[in-house]
Length: 502
Ligand code: FRU
Image (tube, rainbow, N blue to C red):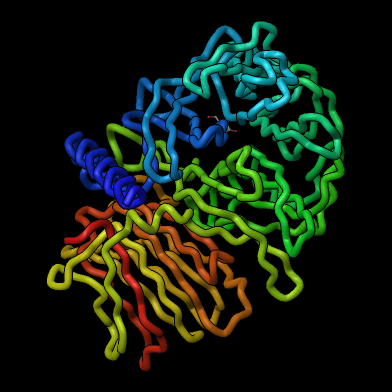
């Protein structure tokens, strides 16, 4: 009873926030996602300071409150108990004389190593880059430095440390995005920092004094652009600890522009030893960038990215707000042949939100209609299918012939998202695109799950071994979904779940 009461409340809350969003303007009505986090108004980029504490997930984010393009960065703040329904909070960190508040992380300082709280009342500590634009314009090189702030009221308000910055740039221009975690081997805090084309690791006993330990990556992975927003965390595979190093790269992604690669290996408390220096991508789509994981979630790993791409983020056709986050995803390690990979899957709390269900069986002719105006349900929805290995596509379309194609190409053994005819694509030359991704799984059955929101699609193929995220901006909502395949169809039941009952 209690559980369903909570469920009804969270659905009502969800709908009321949706209704609130819909009133604002036409790009809100058309494009504001119903399943994804967006700022109430204005510009957002990277997720920052993600930390779980006392039953609450905190999401901070790069935020410019005075306009809908990138500007002097603040940290916006939202909280959630299930990673799906978010409550907006006041701005957490404002720029100051040391500069703007760029990306960074937050930790629960359980042993009060920083001395900002007490052991009984541990502080939350945020570690972030301060970017001093005036210093940059003067031609100095050390304009990106790391600062800290602490909260003694569970993240509601933040006090900046009086002796900031705690880590000054040694004269390197790209010196940013600290991700900090307690490391038991070192018995210290470890900071993973993006420094131009590589990672620097620093250690500290107290979050205030930092010592450089090592570097990684000059000759590893993809280097089409600058390395940003790293993350380092352990995961378990068959009882063994595997360290994951995430590194965002802009440009140089597999489908152009921004994307996030990862390395698997060991971290001995000082040095990262990769199993391989080959590039692997956490998501092959064009619109998942700067993603990192929540701290303090024990043996679970939850990831969220900024659902955009620096190539065109500032000109996408939304007006009162710009940018959404990806769905929160749970990460796990999966072996395919001899290859260990990260697989991602939407968090479980997506399921009760998409409560309407329709199952299609016995698909005969192509195209096969999953929903339309006559057979209603619509976007947002999740479509999950399992199919024998054969080429097929899922087509979402509207009455004026705009379409979004998601599919598998058997000859190339690739998944794809084709948004080239998906509506408004002309705002940037790199936007109309057929994005492709390799099929990583070796299984002879395809499992594909697709989550479509008003202006985004995320695909999780083969239990999340291949993930792709892409934005799209149709002139009118997609009212039809069909499966298309050369005859004969080789699908099992296709399950469609959607928001509420219509
Ligand atoms: C990544 C990034 C970070 C930086 C922030 C500035 O998208 O460029 O490296 O801290 O955005 O907003």
